[in-house]
Image (cartoon, rainbow, N blue to C red; front, side):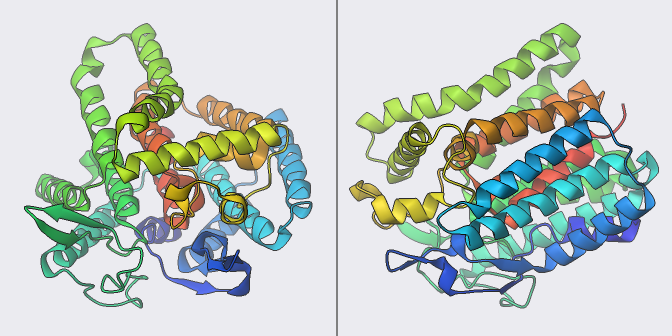
Length: 398
């Protein structure tokens, strides 16, 4: 069990997959990568881990298990009724797998979740991904190719992220993830969890891994990861001065940013010419409009990009057909109020399975900026598995 969990952690950033059906990914004559069903190498490991865990540690039937089961079944029926059931059902299966892995983590005894082998695997993943990213940035090209854990071809310029530095344009590294933002999020989450488990590895390895990870995050130029990192450092700086009541107030304040961030972005987008800001704000507006049209059930999982391709009237989004870069708004658009209530119920269940308020607050400081400014923790396999790694910290005992 430890070996499978360790391997799963190591494969979090892997983008190695098998495409199951190319044609499903087309809408309005455009190929939309988010719609294409893919089977990831990490899916196979996650499935094996969940199967063995649940076979060995069978969960007891409780009101929360019944609640989650009923919600899951209703959401399944909703996907059958979408305009593109194949795409929605595959995405539903991917979300279900992530959910079962999370459920499996809760069932595991502490000695397995906190095994030193898992920590060493985490450190190895961070070190490897950071070194690959630094090499990509320095050489401005891919290092090993796709068969190395799914490394992106950085010389295929369509859709490749770049940054202008000193008047020169640089390709941004993505490690073996599909995008620099995803790499930055994975490195940040992994670094926070590694610091929490710092007693499991030698000090020299801890410091060197964190240093190279910090450098790796830096060269991605991911503003969302930088912001989440500052939130995490801010919490580390003040947590010793906060009692339990104050920590709960701070926790509520952090989660209120889910509403405040899109509001602030919408105001700044009126006077800003920054395309990253205006596109995100416009996508948020599309999500709100979509939710208003179908508030109860939403349009169905993984339907946002298809709907945008077919009905888009925003010129700024003509070549930017992507999910809303705000996970709660994207969930509202695709699952409606029912999906959000189901998600809140799962969060309450997770809270009941962890008594570590500090870990919950720290995880929230990392999570909230990432889900308020991007979508990959929900839409991409690497992102969903990164959330699993974050839960390794949340579920730890004090």
